[in-house]
Length: 407
Length: 130
Image (cartoon, rainbow over all chains, first blue to last red; front, top):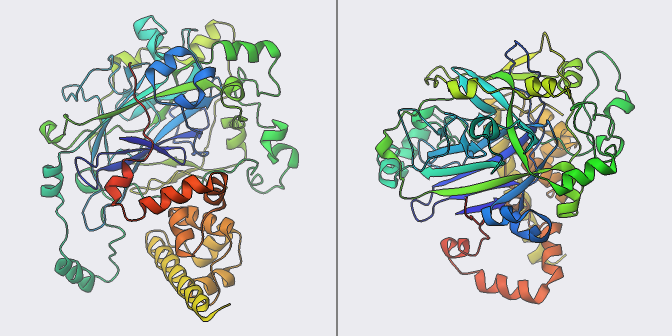
């Protein structure tokens, strides 16, 4: 079953195992430039709001109701990353493992193939959690992804449109399979009270709080990292070595001062009536490939047969143009994210993560051949802000996937 | 305050303080700088001495907003920390106050049900055809 808790999809399989539970949320972030550079990980700027599509039946396209699922708002050319949040399993050596398929417009983000039933290993079409802490985009090459960037469906930008030549689904689809219960219990048996006592006696610094927060076959220590979402209206800290400018760092939602970021995406208060009307008439957004980022998508270390393919949960995540969000939900959408260049100009941190114990997948040629938002927007004569960034301060945190800045 | 209330209050002070101290120190072992008393207090926007007193049970648990900030800083569930502090969030209070009879009955009926039965009542995200 999938429930919605504090803007996070919580997927659980109580019928499989009481510990079979994982969270998945969608993080707002900076859109990295698309040039010859490969960028480090941008920060998370807090979760996108998520609502049940059924709560807004009268205000969304009828095919959204048919698909079911949830809706979140994205500005045109806004980027996102998907955060996997394994739940701690006290007394076990690993959180419960899941195989998670992520597709955009029903195109698998790892293989570039159309979404298929089941799990496949010849071209691995899923990520394993815990192990994979996040996914920022399409797996185009070993160690490199192209960032997930939202563009209006029907304009030819999305991976779906470029591959299928149709603008049929849009949005993001997730399909989740748990590990078989007997495999989990065999690989990560419950630690008996006596053993627990001995373990604590022999190493008082060891704590049951750590156990099962992640790790296991796919590496240790994932999943319990605290998230510090940037609250609405909290600005950036001042530029290094200089005082804060209230105009540049004040409440973005009221002034729109960070709205310089996506050149093609006006803020609600800046958008013309025509632009808003267009977004309301066709709110569907698709995901398209953006700039290149350093990121490994890890190979599965379990046997294919270890996965419980009899049990699966799936969810359709519709992406609504933020300009139509108020019309759909009655709520004001989040402010547009800052531009990557504005963020970088203040010396704020970028991130790096590397797990040397795991092998990375080689990437999909099909996805590598897609045209990026930058390439297509330039062809269409609607170029987006794409200033290259240099000398970015990168925080390297091996085995500790925290990507939020200290806002 | 009655003597019974005093005991309940003191229990919350001690339980809440012990819990957040243990959790913070646990996180501090993983990242000494980020989870020092001073750093966590700064993140939650309270004085380090105040946080120290809360942790030692010398001060009652703080207000709801501070508890929620503490929960975020320590990667804990805000509702769980609020419960440890003997509080219920304003959000939940409002939900109950909007339909007091219905939610009063519902909560009373659910109180002895096992977790798995309660889980069946959780609203699921509906899957459709795609």
